[in-house]
Each structure stands twice: as structure tokens, then as C-alpha cells.
Length: 169
Image 1 (cartoon, helix red, strand yellow):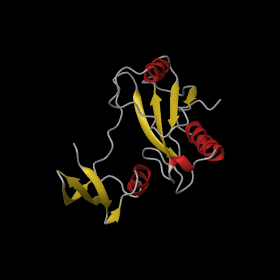
Image 2 (cartoon, one colour):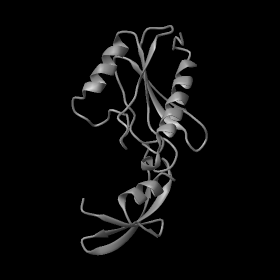
Image 3 (tube, helix red, strand yellow):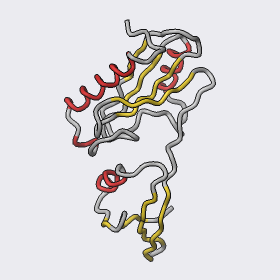
Image 4 (cartoon, helix red, strand yellow):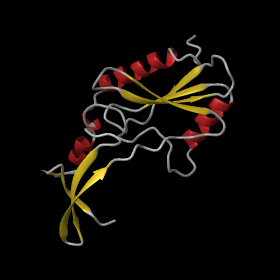
């Protein structure tokens, strides 16, 4: 707490969006050089990035997938009923903001409750992050257009329809 990141891999950090864009180049297990101001003094440290936490549920399975073209792949979070066989699917379209679609570290969430109840009732639910959000690839999310979003959501639906537990009809 209180550290201020001033350089990443030796390059000056000029804004939070620029920092986030640069961080998108790295993944779990990568080592990144951070220079921070801590208590008035600069210090540099190599930091190995941990993987993101994954959602879990005792009531249904959660499957992580990706869809889309290289460089613009989006992360999918799919809830799958425990019952075997093929299930109808619904897709949850997130608010078109910069936040991820996962439900981690949150208190009660009406969308999480809704998707959980749909899954327990026998539906597969599909959430697709926007290009540039969370573990999805691509440029800064603020550069997305409606066409970018439609293309990635369409790719997510196509991928979901091909999962062996989804009734594509």
C-alpha cells in the first residue's frame, strides 16, 4: 500500500490506461521489472506474475475457454450444469465498460445469483469479456468499437455452440 509505480520494464508510466496496456503484454509466470516510489525513495524489483484466480462452484462446473482471432481472442467463462448431456445455453452480455465478467472477490451479486440459478435449472451460461479486458487479448478496451464487440460476442456464441455439452438448437 502506498507504492507508486513510476516505471515498468524501464519505461515511464504516464497514466493508468498506459500502465494497463503495457501489462497486457505479460501473463502468468512472466517476470516484470517494476520501479516504484516507496516512502519517498525509488526502488526496483522483479515481480513474477501469478495466474488470475478462477471462479469455483459446488453447484455447477465452470469452464474457461477463449474465442476469436489471434490478437483479439476473448476469454469465455461458461457455467455448466452437473447433469450429463446437452443443455440449452444463454449468453450474458456485460455492461460495455472496462470491467471483467468474472465474479471474484465480490459480495452478493445479482448477476452471479441469476446465472447460478439458471445453471442449476439446466442452462449453460456464457460470459465473454470484451477485447482488452481481463485475460482477453487486444488493445486498450477504450479503443473498442461496437463492431469490435459484436465480432467478439459472435465468436463467443460460435465457440459456445460447439461445446459438447451445449444444445446448439
